[in-house]
Image (cartoon, rainbow over all chains, first blue to last red; front, side, top):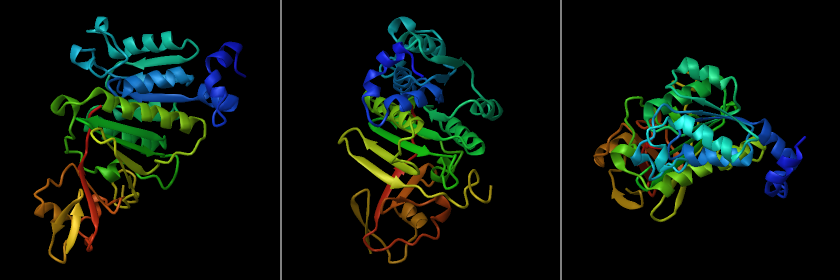
Length: 250
Length: 66
């Protein structure tokens, strides 16, 4: 049952045929781990908190720097020097006191991550480096937890959804199999705030759809966003039978 | 044969696989992803995947930023 306060807060969801009271309860029961509280994680966490996702676990180990504020919209100038997860936890609790927020203020290894995955329904990869992305993917494959991956640099974005609860799911490693590759990041290439914000926002949209049981159009697909033209390209990703993370040869 | 790579026309020998294409284009193998006609081709298939006339190839890099 939703409380009267929740009925009011989420009234615009309740009007939607695709969400309604049942969907809102699904959101309330949802437990989402968001890894990375930067340019992707800021809008993703804010939208999921606002939407009433009942449990949010947020992970990061950085302090806020002045150069983050150009795109990481969860923070203010007065926050500089503070731990991002502590700042964001406070922000999300102020935004929506109906939800629970837990913060993880350290770099997790795969064992710790696998423990955390036992307590959530969904993971958003909002990190900024290839090593973390490969580890998160491998842990989600092992734990069979759905994973929504976002990435952005310059004026380009990438969005993928690997539903590891399903047998036919491809994985991030099928697409980018080399652990040695650096992958371009915001500090070496630059990025426009609304580009990374667009991708983080769409991770939140896909998360809400997943939690409320709405079908996703992007499972086992890669969406490429061009911030210059606003064009999207869509590519199908098939499970690679030779993949050392999710394939038969692992 | 003629194919397109990121919408630019590229002329190739008649027998060319994806790995050979990347060498012709002087593109790094690591960190690249390839789609042919909107379907991602896994890196393990690159050597065996023979390109065909009029294939639309998309070549892009892994991005890690966030």
